[in-house]
Length: 150
Image 1 (cartoon, one colour):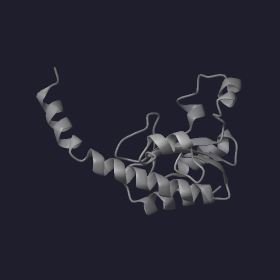
Image 2: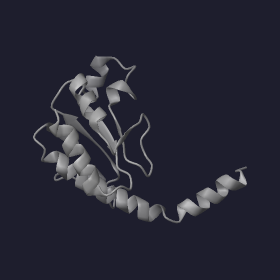
Image 3: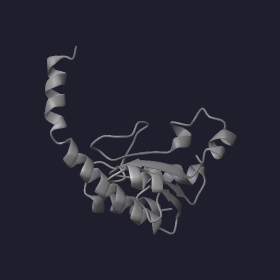
Image 4: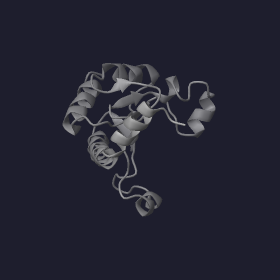
């Protein structure tokens, strides 16, 4: 059985879930579009971009608040980009009302052999983002400054 305080917080937060998810979807789409046009970004993984996935288009009304991109640099240079972020917090676990960033080779896929990571497309320059409720233009400005300092 859930504690009364937890039940209260869940009940209160569920009322705004749809509004929060819509905001995160919109922000992630804008961030993905920005990253797709940045000269230091090799690839953006977000089903709502251009061609996107036909399966995602059939199954989803919008495309979520999470995305990843591959920076045009190695592990050390990519870590420096992530470290320069001011609004995105570095986190191993993604999802929430605050925007978060992680470099999978140092967190979620750290223990996996490099060959297996490469086979799965988890390259040294990959960064995963979870967009929160901050203004999209603030997040884009944060990414722009982190990417341009390299």
